[in-house]
Every structure is written in C-alpha cells, then in structure tokens.
Length: 226
Image 1 (cartoon, rainbow, N blue to C red):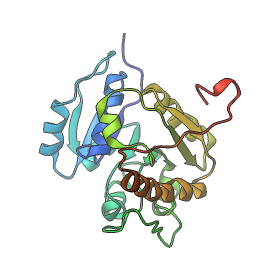
Image 2: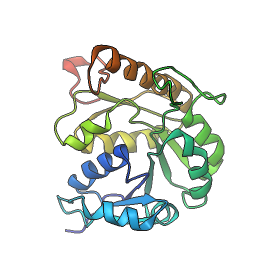
Image 3: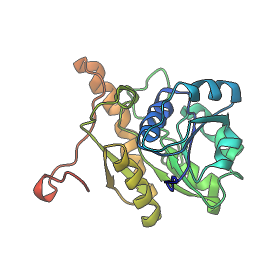
C-alpha cells in the first residue's frame, strides 16, 4: 500500500530535538527528510534512523533541498540560528505549514525568561515568512531525550497558530507519535509556552530532575486525547 502520509522535513534534523522527532515520525510511518547545512552530515544521520509502518528510508539533504521536497517543514534549530535559517528556506516553504519548535534561550542564563522584542520566536517566524507559509509553533516543553528514548511521554504539547486548520494538522502529527497535542490558540499565545521552557529548565536544575513537562488537566473523562 502506498504511503499517503505527508513528507516531513526536519530542519536541524541532526540535532537532539530534530533527530528525536525524526525517529518518532519515521517509526510511525511518515516519510522523513533530515535537513542540515551539511548535506553529508544529514545523510549520515539519516542512515542511523530506522523507519517502520511502511515509511521509506529516511533521507538527508541540505536545508533548502529538504524544505523544498517536504509537504510540512519542522524547524528545530538554536535560537541563535533561527532568523538566518528562515531567510535561507523562506522561498522553499511557499504555501506550506512550518512547525516552529524554537525557543528564545539566551546562554548562559537559559533558565531566565528572555523573550525577543517581537514577542516570541514564533511571531518572528510568521513576520519574516509573511504570507509564504502558515507558522504553527509546538514542542517547546517536551525534552529531546524523552523523544529519543522511544518510550511513552507523560506530558502535553501546546500548539499555536493563526490557522485552525493548520493547528489541527499539527495536532494530528503529534498524536501519531503518541503525545497529546492541545490547541492553544493563535501564534501570539506562543509566548507563554516559549517562556515556560526557561521556567522548566530552572525547575529541572533546582530539583535535580531531567525533562520536566506540562500536563493540561480537566478534560472530561480524563482527556486521553484532545
């Protein structure tokens, strides 16, 4: 049976979060492309990921090639590279959903909330891309180590975007890898989840934990799915 799932490009796919998401989606049967500034690095990382459930082998490419070949583009890069990579791929994401996972962490004080003048990384992305793409922000508060470990993840993912339809698409992608996605409204609200990342980093440090997350309570019947 042909794979009719959308092809996903992970820009920053050789990093911890990008590779963790790539592993999860490839195992769930999605065609995945890893994007990197170095095509050779992306190809090497792609060979280490085993697809399942009818997914083709994971591919590696440079950032522009990966973004151009995908139906949905996921941006998982450090905040310091955020704007430069958006500028690099902006013509390749025309008409696509761009899932922005970027959090404005500013070393060395990454446990201190330091939001950009534009409000949030997601708002920066939407302003830069304009009408080229529909930006949806997500995955701010899920640890990369948990994704890579492959087990169950006991936290929710808040999903923000100005298009309800685009948010629904991303929530379905999140559900496919065994996590609950929560519709948290327009892109302006992403500031809350992005700021919360620094708070969670501080909690991890103070309580000597690894991978503190969030869970939204109060759904009827316990809310196994949103």
